[in-house]
Structure formats: structure tokens, C-alpha cells
Length: 332
Image (cartoon, rainbow, N blue to C red; front, side, top):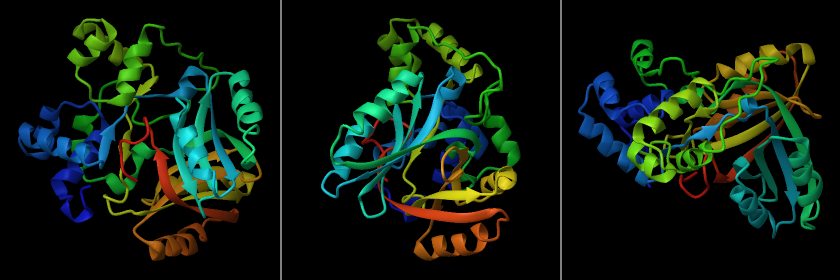
């Protein structure tokens, strides 16, 4: 695996460029950051091969009318890793983590219907006898998304603007109220499956997988992106980027202050995700720190200074079993 000390400014600029547009041509990245196209391609292959970064083609569930859920499970000590691995293998889960002392699991899921939600939450998980407790919180509104993580920023606004694709949202935004859900065609399934494995798969490779022509692949990717259905987030090794400590924060916030606190969290470089949720706690954040003392200061200074935050439960991530894409491809 690539060590933090070996990631130089060029590596970090390439990562920032891919955060802006995961499918941006290497030629464009090279022009923006001032190196050769061969340098960009070679460095990306090294970063991907060593588990530092990978581009994932992901479906934006809310734009399809899906409801996003964050789930917490308590399991017996001998079962948590196996249950977490089973959750990671499911196609409808992402961000699967072992937390705390290794007896708690958190994950996110997107369910297209109440029936599928109930099948997972009310039938499959409770029937696993080694699951001691389950809580599920619907994600209501997002304030910060992994693709906006401030710690990745290395390019100036002008450079970033040159990389941003026309007509494509910069982040996984909420679907507009009342907007009809978008429905990909059945023929899109092979395309989406291949992009989930490699978001930078070539048009020729995608054409071979789908039976379409490369020009049809290019056109359909553009249509799905502009519709807000298809996004290209990064699976990242936060440790390699200098942030080995990760934690999930479940906060109880005064209802009238939720928007203000969420907006404040979105401006913190430590925060890669923040959203309001249902449940006993009403705001969830994912934070990253350079070490335990950094996390301690962040909680005691920046979180403590936010007006309206009543309680904070901190659960450190012990192991990441799955990120934005299929498991086992990026080191935690």
C-alpha cells in the first residue's frame, strides 16, 4: 500500500481532479495540473493498484425514488465480522463499517420499496440470532457528501471549473420535492454493473459488456449523469491520505438548529458526510482525523462550539468492509 509520505502534491491534485469528475480524461487533468498525460495515467494506475483510490460508478438512489437508510447493528463478539461481511456482499449496501469494540456494525442502504426495506430490517436481520439489536434511521436531507470532502482540495477554483462536466451535479444532491423518479431502462443494468466495478472503464470495454457500440455507451452515460442518476464517487484510503482515524457521530440537535449545524459541519475539513435523520438522534456525521488527539480537539472545540447540539455519541471505525463500490478493492 502507498504510504502517506509518498503521496506528493501531484498525486493529491490528481485525486482532487477525480473527486470533481471521476471520468475526466487524463489529458484534461494533465493540462489543468501542468504535467504530461502519461504521468497522470501512470500515477492513477499506481494509486489504484495500491488501494489508495478507485473511481466507482454509483446510482443516486434518491433520484430514483429510493429511500436511504443508515443502519446500526449490535452483534455478539464472535459474529460481527461475519455479519458485516455478509452485509458488504449485498448489492444494496454501501459504507459498511465495524465500529467501537468490534461488536457494532453500521451501514447505509437504499431501498426502492417498503417491501424491500421491511424484508431486510424486519425479517432477514432479526432472524440472525447473533444480532442483538438493530436500529434504522431514514436519511432526510444531506449537508455534506464524500465527494465534497474538503481535505482533498488541492486545486484552485479556476482549475476546478475546467474539470467540472457540463450539466452534471457536483454531488449527490437530494431529489427536488415532487420531482418524479427517474427510471433507468432494463438495458442499463449491464452498464451500471460494469461501472460499479470500475468507474473509469473504457467505452470499448463497456461496449463489450453491454453489446452496445462505444458511441451508444458514451451517450447513455451522459444521459444518466445529466439526469442525476449516475455519479462517480471515489473509494479512498483515508489512512494513505493522512487521516487514519475515522468516526461516526450520532448527534441530538435542537430541531430549529439542525439546518444551521448541518451547514456548519459541511464547512469542516474533518467532515465527509453529514445528514439529518429520523430516530432518537437526528443528525449523523462522518469525521476523519490525523490521530486521536486531533479527534479529541475536534469534538471538544468545533463540535462543542455548535449551538443547539445537546448530545454526541462517538463510534470509532475499526475496519471498513465496503465503501461506495464492491468490497475488497480499497484499503481502509
